[in-house]
Image (cartoon, rainbow, N blue to C red; front, top):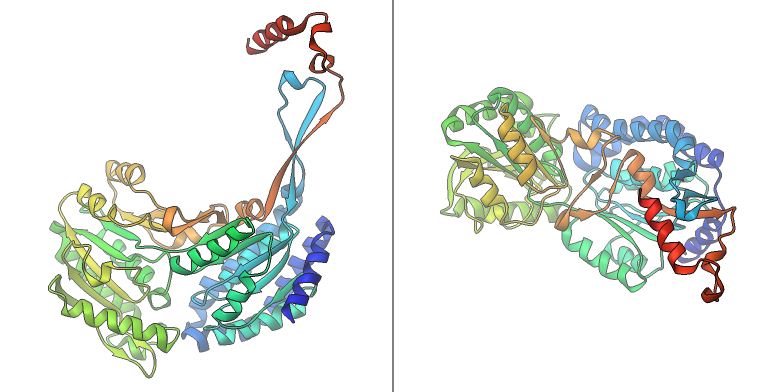
Length: 465
């Protein structure tokens, strides 16, 4: 059935979408989201045990911000951009037109199922595209509600939602799209790219990686502990830009660990399992992976000391906020892949160059963070660490700024979006020259020209000056 729906979208994608039509769609989506706000928060709680405040801040608030940005700025973004024209094109005008791709496939993940479905969708609609949205099968309540919201707010020949497991995803990838936008794991990202290559379909991949976070002796220790505890354990550690592992300078290690423990307990209590503020793992399958990882790491000789946590409950899919000190070795179980769980390994260091040497053993991460007041350390971090996006003296918050492009580099992804960058990502920048002047020297036969090649070379020299 969805194959016929894709054909309907393809036919509609050939029709230019004027400004007002795009604005109407975005405004309709906004009104429907506001109507279903309470149901959205309830669905996110059922799927991930997200507290309503956390769910609003990390899901709905960012979607509303993106909608407001696009509704306000779309008239300017759609306007053709005048480009400079060199003297060699005397009498011509040059412009850049934002052309929609056509039919876009958006495959979204389960960890922020509303945010990571709708923010790309907003960019695609703003760019004048038609969309097939494939949300995750794991976030069942939110995905089902997305169908209802989109069917009520957007025309069926503009957006179609396809539900189903990975088999449905694989089948969708056999279809021909004009752009594929995927958010998820590196392994699945490779599959998406391989499928897209068959039709030379452009892709945007928002993936992940092992995001380092550095706490130097020049950091505000209490602030650094508070913000890392929040960023790491947000959504039970299931955040692609969360700190994956922590470097702490040796001479502040003990003080920092105490502050980190205190803030974690302050956020979630002595028993986080009873806290309404702490999330749950999305599914038994993901829980089993984390449980095996926890067991391997605690049995590893490279794990020096468990500081906090380690408790698990398979019935409620609960994994306690866990902090441990490990040796700086790539072979440690927690260093084999992105952790994507509320487990935070700490690696002590003496000099900042040690952090660079260790983190450089891994593919370039989606995010990196440093806490320091020292300007030289900030400069060293910015100039030597390669990453998709990040913060100085904070973590996670870069993703909430619609004026900053968000995306990875290397193994952590390609392409970016949010705000203006979303519009650019979902449109082709079509360059056009309109000529108002005849230039006879360009036409053959060249020997019959009055001045010929010497005159052309002279003109070229004069243009330089």
